Image (cartoon, rainbow, N blue to C red; front, side):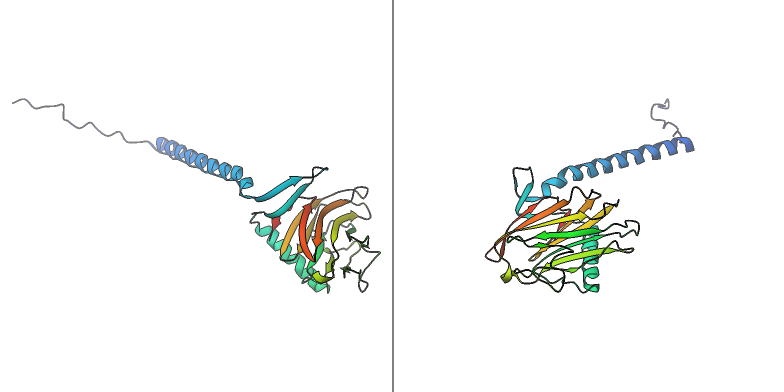
Length: 235
């Protein structure tokens, strides 16, 4: 009986080292491509995780009403905590119902005199030349931490301790570059009630002070917050 040679197994071809490397490289490229697609999808979806009602005013300024900005930024949380520590260390009020804090020169190279400014509904203007501690406005506001061209970290704080003392109307917050020197970034914190907003402001000229936000108070409660600068986080 003749032997059937059709079922004879064919010899297995052994892969060379060059072919193995090529196959590994191909798989690595496939995996990296998939990971890049996932990262791109997450970046595209991120803006849609922000919930809230947005309107545009006459100057195309975003008004945020009862919004929750879901930006889980650990760096922003660290900056917020650091600003609180710096205010505490200088005897400022971190427990106030409403306060406005700026911090700069964290790198030791931004030797500039930045100033925090606030205007109350009645026209009172709180800044380095008006209503510094121990003076207070009729609404209870005062600049309780003030620094001029610090060699180290700069910090300023304006605070209103008591919500029941606040008059109805708009409270406007801004930053001025007093001596018009170059700087990198200024961190800003606006705390109103149980909400805190963190902003980052880059270099600007003295001729163009930066408006940060407007808080509208009615019956000693927050009615609205209008952001001139987009917050990078909300807690």
